[in-house]
Image (cartoon, rainbow over the protein chains, first blue to last red):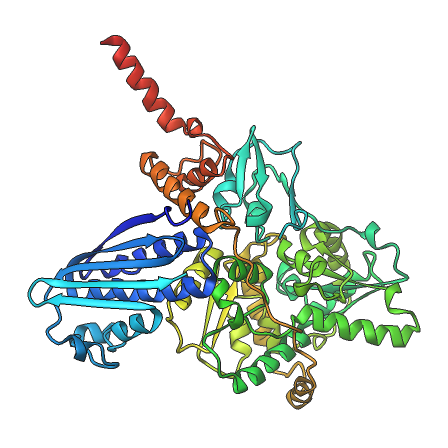
Length: 142
Length: 427
């Protein structure tokens, strides 16, 4: 029954937890390699997962990254509880960032996160409610 | 992959199944079966950490010995410059080279000039390169295998320049064939190696092109006779200028980077730290660096698993030599630049991705197996005790899914099970 097999795993991400930032995307990358996803596709998924995970660490209180793998696609569902994004169109522009000085000093917040995710995804949907949080739906076809 | 086990083998007579190798292996390539270590060939990257770890010296490198090279009319030892770190401070490279001719080689040649020449070639390559950064050093064969297997998306960032040992062997063999009037196949050039990974590079060169090296002998295997010969030779004055140039520093961590013109370099030693850095590169980070020098061994080649001296001693000895003889150029930059343009240093073709085998060749079956692995993992204790014969609970779950182990092999689960049964029996 091809198509029936799906792998799902959810990873918790804590805001401001810089010591563990990147763990979820590293685990996701390992799983994709174990399944035998082609290297170039793994790299695209890894960059998208890493940027999405860092967005939660940098801007939200907490969140989850859910990985779904089927023979047709890789899907990353990222949900966070945080301030949300008031103007998504603006946030999608390269170089636009609301990062604080502190975050920029750590080398983050260059305004490339969301554009990078879009660049590496085949389908990308983003929804945000100010004061509540943000949801990303990232799909990469296999 | 799929070749016979290439760099090391387990001697079943000596193996006591004590698991040190299994725990030391950075790619989880070792299992304990029926009380003996077994190496999973398609996960082995030839780093030699198991050789270093075994308390019974049961894991042996597949190096050659003198008798293997009796077929040559003329034998030349080409020692890794790591050998210069293996003797007291006052022992100069010239003395070590001379001592090698007293223990059975017709001649011994230094290859330090080739490390410096290759550094100049890297400078030239970097100047014209416009692809993704950082470039990754390709001179530690275990690191190359790690990149091919675990970071296949990064293979094009390995610098496509040939290794100093190959460049030196080619040069020496051609020259000697002319000088001695012998055909090339009657001249044996034998590499004295600090690690098993380089044996593989000699026996199975990348992309299967022919190597100019005819075999490898472990530095540790010739150390006893060499030490005696070195002590005798040390009484004669040595040519202090015999080996010179910044290339002397190549066997220590950071030594390659120090030879380059760019300062945007980073040197990393030890496979776990190398893997961590490559992880960052794969995540699109570290692009501000030009050159990433990576060694499987923590202190670089001077601390290889087939060396003898304490790695810190070896490192300090090499740095001492760099201090004293590093300032004079080991080769002419203009000449190397000319040769570089002629393709003298180019590696033919590219490094190919060779990922570790996936759970299944068929993707939907691989997904199902990974889902089962996750279910199994959730029941396991996650203490990575190794008592089942696999190094981690993760690798055990994989073994179960692949039919190489059964869940009953988990002694922690079995103990819990027994305890529960006892309680029910008592109740």
